[in-house]
Length: 239
Length: 239
Image 1: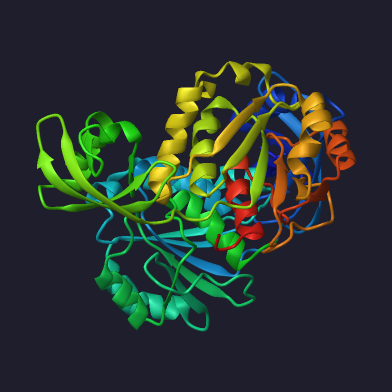
Image 2 (image 1 turned 60 degrees about the horizontal axis):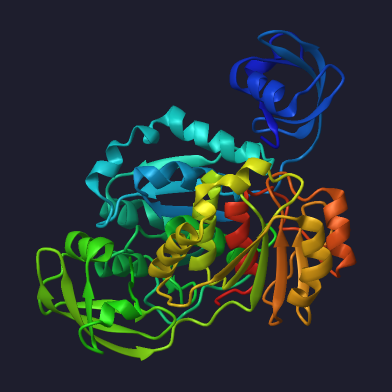
C-alpha cells in the first residue's frame, strides 16, 4: 500500500479528519507501524493526493489529519478491450491494468474464453472494485477504472465497439502479423487483446472490419499478464 | 506450452526421433490432444526450432519425428540485476523474465530483501531451471538463461559488477529521480531493479559509484513483476 485511499465515508467526523478501521487500519499499524505524529501518503478516491498526519491511534481505529494538494497521475488515453482471462489470472490482470493507469476496461467474450470463466465469483462488482483499489494503492493513483462485462462477442464488436473506438487509433494485439506494435503514440487508442491462444481468425476479421489494425509484440509469445504491461509501455512510455 | 522443448536425452533411440514421457507427454495428450500424424512446434534446448510429427503414441510415451530449421529469437542485449523477490513472486518473476528474453540474471541481496527469502526452496537449481523451461515453452524460445545468486550486496557491486557491466549502458530503476527510462536503445545494457520498497539511498549511491544512472518509469509505482516487462519493453521494444 504505497497510498492510503480515503473514501467520503471516512470523513464522517470532520471535513479534514479521516478515521480508518479494518483493513487499512491494520495495514497502517502492521506495515507502516505508524505512531501519532507520523505522516502517511493518502489520496481521496476520485480526488487529489496529499498527506495524512496520524492524530489518534486506538485499538481499532486510527485518525488522520488530511491535506490534499496534488492531482493523481493522468489516465492513459486508452480503452482496453480484453478477452476475459481465466479466474486465476483475472485478479492479477485487473490489479496490473489498474496500476498501469487503465481507466476504461471492457472484459469481453471470445471463442477461446471458456464459458466457465464467466461464473467466476471474482467478476462480482465488489470483487472487481477490491482489485482496482489494490492497483490504485500500489500505483499511487486515485481514479477508479470503469469495468464493463460483455458476454457476447459479435453484438459487442458490431453494435457497441464502433462508438467506443470512434476517433481513436484501433489496434488488436495478434502475433500472426508483420506489423509491429507502434511505439510512443500520442493518440487516444482502443486496444483489443485476445485470450490465451489468441482471437480466432473470425474474431480478428470482425475486429478488422471495425477498423482495427493487427500488431505484434516481437518474436516471443507472451502471456496476457506479461503482454499487457509490454503493450502499454510501448504505446505510452512514461505515461 | 507453445513449444515442446527437447533435450539431448530425448533422442536416445535415433538422431531425429524424440521420445517423450512424463509432463511433456501428458501435456501433448491432454492439451494438444495430438494423434499420430499431427505436427507440433518443437525446439531443441539451446538449439533450433522446428516441427515434430507424431509417429507413435503409447500409454506412457509419444514419439516425434523431429526436423529443426530456424534459430530461436535473439537474446535481449541485457544483464539483469534483480533484488531477490519474495518467494511468492520469485517463480513468476523467473518465468516472466525468461519469456521476455532475459539470458543473464543476477539475483542479489539488498537491505529490503528479507533474509528468509534466501531460504526459499524455489532457489534450488532444479526449481529455477523448471521455471525457466516454463518461460521458454511459453515464449517459443530455446536458450536457457544463466541465473546467478549473490547473497552479499557490497562485494557484488564493488568487486564483480564492474566487470559484468563493463562496456554496457548502466541503469538502475529508481522512482526518485527526474530522468525517465530511455526508450529503444540499441546498446548492451546492465539494468538493476530493486526490491519492493526500492533500493535504500546507500545502495543507490553504491550503484551510482559503479557508473549506474537512475531512471524512473513514469508517475506510477509498479510492482517488480509489472515493472520488469515495462522496463524491458521501453528499452528494447520489439526485441
